[in-house]
Structures are given as structure tokens and as C-alpha cells.
Length: 315
Image 1 (cartoon, one colour):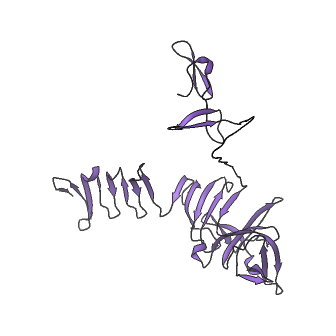
Image 2 (tube, helix red, strand yellow):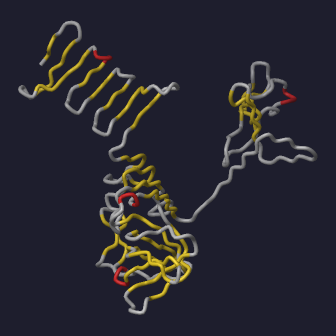
């Protein structure tokens, strides 16, 4: 029961609003006016699971004693632009050329998490100007006891463009900048180590297409062909479709006991209705739990349908 029936206590268990209608006895009709969560409104005291009660309000003042057996603090964090979750990142502490002028020597403020052949990216807007580079690390060298990133000067050429709609370094473009103190650098892939070629990329302002991308196989300075899972944004290879995209993935549904009730497998096989229907990649399958099944007759080059019990074969 969301609210008490006595007119003097409307809203005692949850915030309500009048519908403008009246009940048969002439009393105003009210409905619950409450939405849970950070962006919600109103307040409510309710049994959210059997035997467990929850109170949700905007603020709470305790004048004397407050006893809490478990305190869970939930915080909301925000980033501007995009967030990359990869194998390494850091802030540049020093960036100098070596004596030959052929290599950039870069140290970072944090513990060294980069390795040889990592691709690192830096992208930042400063006073309306885009600063950025996407380069490969040649080696991690110990200089005066400090782990130092070595990057050939030749890496800082070209510009960041697009290949098949995905970001990539284009040698025909320009605009690649050089490393500087306080630059935030992030690892995206590795040219040799397959265990460092994946990333999670969350972005909200790239062409107005917010999405969560999971990338695999980043073995060059390009994201082309690397997005294997996407939620939101434009689905790769479509004309503006949005939603969920997964390459070579599996979609599975289970009941409360973990029993599989439907599944679409990476090889194209699909099962629905707890086995009621099955479609296989060899063009065989069944419906109605097997009451009607079919198979592909290669010699006749057509589907043959079998009816259970009768043994009837319908070509």
C-alpha cells in the first residue's frame, strides 16, 4: 500500500499528487509521485524486498544519536569528453630530446606502466587549439636510475584522421604535436604483445554519439576494425542505427535458477523458448519442441521437413 487511506495522512508513506478525479465517496484521488535514484524526485518509505524496508529522501538531519550497522556511500564521478580504460597511463614529468636529436626521452610522474611497442595517445584542447599525438614507444630505457620512455622523433608525423569511420593516424595529414610536461598520455594497443591490444573506451562528445566501446586487436595506430562491442552511438557498418553491437558474441537468457531459456551462439546457431525452436547453421532445425523438424538435403538442394510420429518426409 503506497499511501494511507485516511485523508489526514496522504503522503505519509510516499509523496503523492492529485489526479483531478474523485472517488465514489467524493474524496480526491491521489497517485504516487516518486522516482528513485540520483535524478529522481519525491520521497518514499517502502518494503523493497520481503522483510526489508527502505526510506529515500533528499536530505536527513539527525540531532542526536545515529546508529548505522553498515554505511554505504555512493559517489558520482564525471569526466569531460572521453575515458579510456587500458593497460597504462600517466602524466609526463619531463620531455627532452636526446643528444642525437633522434629520440624523445619521456619520464612520467607515476609508476611506469608502459612497455616497449605500446601505442600512446595524447589529446587535449587548450585555448581552442587541439593538441595531440599518437605514437609507438621504441623502448623503456633506464637513464640515471629512472625508467624512461624512448620515442623516435619520426613517430611525430602525420595527423589523426579516420579510416572506415574510426580514428587512425594518416601520414598524408599534419598536426601531430610533440610531448610536453603535464601531458596526459594513455596506452591504446601494442604492435607486438597481443595481451596489450585491448581497451574500453567511453565517450560522450564525439559527433554527438555517446557510446561504450570495447576494442580488441589494436596492433597499429588505428581503431579501424577494433570495435567488437558497442553500446549506444552509431553501430559500425550501418547508416545511423543505434543500440547494441557485438561481433562474434553470444546472447544468452536464463531464468532465476540459471537455466538457459534462449541463446544465440557466435556460429549462428540459435535456440528459443527453452528448446521449443532451434535453428542451426547446417540449415537443420526444429519447432514446437521437435514436433516438426527439418534438414538440408544437399543432393536435392532443398529443405526436407519431418513430422514426428508419422515419419512423413515432405520435400
